[in-house]
Length: 132
Image (tube, rainbow, N blue to C red):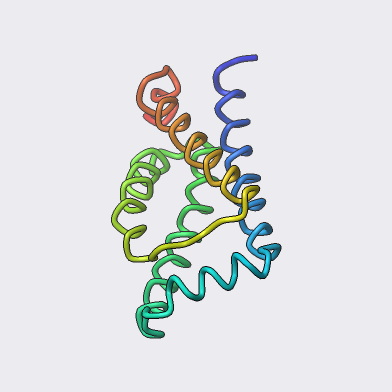
């Protein structure tokens, strides 16, 4: 299997991880939902609304970026790095959150896949595909 196809498969895997992560939100147990409500009871509705809007915009940008990466568009490489870094500044504002074990595994896989994409983008010959 060549490097381009491996990279495309990794991008597709990342997309499916995002889909699984979205689906897993609807299968939280009552205990985890209750715990999350208690942990974030001091968070104002305005703060939740603002962070939610920002998260939605970044989520849509991430999905668009996955398409750019899959098609080897030049903007995909810096956009992915920007979205990866911006997550670290957004996550502290989301608050404390408990996960189901399956959702926790999916999140870990998502971070691992993002790290693998960064390695491909900056440390393999794939980086030349984005310079065309």
